[in-house]
Image (cartoon, rainbow over all chains, first blue to last red; front, side):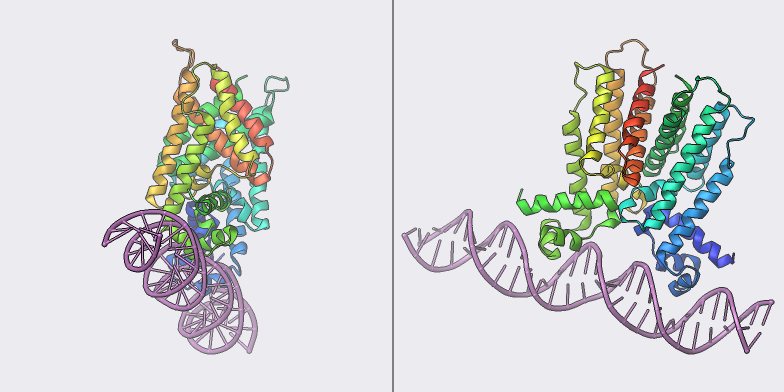
Length: 186
Length: 186
DNA sequence: GATAACCTACCTACTGATAGGTAGAATCCA
DNA sequence: TGGATTCTACCTATCAGTAGGTAGGTTATC
């Protein structure tokens, strides 16, 4: 709502994507925003609270970019291309991996509420992809759509990690291409 | 060498795989081993030092399980299956993701030396896979071997993350199957 | 005059790291 | 052989710095 509030969320997202849950602090966020850490607590009482909000907004804007449902007009090809581009853009605009991918790798030490949001993000992605792959094929032409959706999602999350490590978007481009191909062939 | 030293390394690996670089501390390790944190510093002067050793040993034992080079006798099919099984076993025996996958997602905040070891792990994996996919095909039957290797690696790292998040090995099984299929088709 | 947004000042707990010491085993040398 | 020395593996105690979080005061806005 407030300008400060959204600045906090934006800085927190950036920091969480670069170092995970344990990789950011109220003090760092405060410094970056230009306020004191106590003021961050005014907007978000606890770290769990803040992280939850960051994760929810991330998912929201991710699916806003994606379109809540796969647009009914497109071919599976065009939809998968669109899906991969959302990931690619997420990396391109930040040089960082997917927030949910990063947090997944700390799952064991995450507050349960955060873990649940992350798990929801994964499920929503798989559903979107499954629908996109199935679309327009009443026949059994695209079998195993759900498993193929899992492949595409996992491949992209993995590629985001490597791309962030090597600071090379090529990994996303190449892995996207082959993952799409795999999802649509048989 | 010493029993204590290897206990420290073992505990550190477990903790790093469950929470990343910022997810473990000298004190936690010490408590788990049954000594004091100063004694951990006796064996490993700095955290960078300790993490470096953990990462090197992880890579070493990973490739020991894999076989330094793809065994010349096997078919690409059998070799890829073997590769996927190494990942699957790594999850099965610990319920945790790949150390290098976890650390990749903190790359930005990692000491450079550690980042380099992780990057080396990725490269070694791609080389192994590329060789396995190419093997026995002097013709152009297996084109784009390197890019397919990247797909397999990224898919598996992604699947390890989701499997750890959901505590469900099925993700690794299913993604492995489709990634292998994608790498060998065309 | 409320309410929101921010501050100073502080707390407890924990971080990686260091200083300095001790018990005991190994090594050296007359 | 036996005393002196050195090394290993740990210890206690402490450091400065940072973590998340809180109490209570100030300022600005409606």
